[in-house]
Each structure stands twice: as C-alpha cells, then as structure tokens.
Length: 131
Image (cartoon, rainbow, N blue to C red; front, top):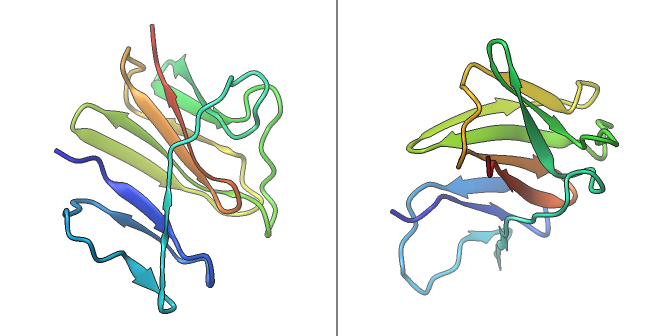
C-alpha cells in the first residue's frame, strides 16, 4: 500500500493529506497551481529542533519536537501536528500556537515505530525508532 502523502499550497498555505494516491499524471491543485509534495525530512535529533523525538512513558509514548532545543510555538511558526505510525495504525494530535511542542500517546514505544510532525513553515519531519 502506498503511504499517505502531504501536500502544501505555495500560494495560500493550505495543507492536505492524500490517503490513497493514484498514478495519474494530473497534479493536486490549489489556487490554480500544483501543490508541493512535502517530503519527509530527517536529521540528528540532538541538533535539529524539528525532529520529533519519542520516549517511553508509564502510559505509552511521549513525543517532543526539538529534544535539546524545543521548537517555537508562535502564531507565525509552530508545529501543526504530531503523529505516531505503528504498523497499520496512526495516532495524531493537532497543536496550536502557545501549546508545548509535544504529545503523549497511549501507544507503547516499539522498534520500527515512525514518528512524524508537520511544521507550518519547514514542513514534514520524521524519526524512526531503531531499538
């Protein structure tokens, strides 16, 4: 199965997720223009404030965006959502400016789990649990 894709309009900023894409040549449009496909970015979580970092908690998994340097949560620059992908299941929390750039999920931290977050300016970031 093809993984869901996130697109963002470069004109108005609308963000959409296409759950089951097709192979047709017609692009996803908004404001009369093709939308940008947001690729999943990765980096070292200790030095990059956009990497979602999961830790085990008593009730499941806590994800913090920016482990050593928390991501800003201002009106013009913030994390829109954080999600955990665990096999065929996806749990997502939507955030607002002023909230902490973190989310707690009642899902046990496991090897192979993928954690993603979406920054309204810098796009889609991912972290995969290796051990």
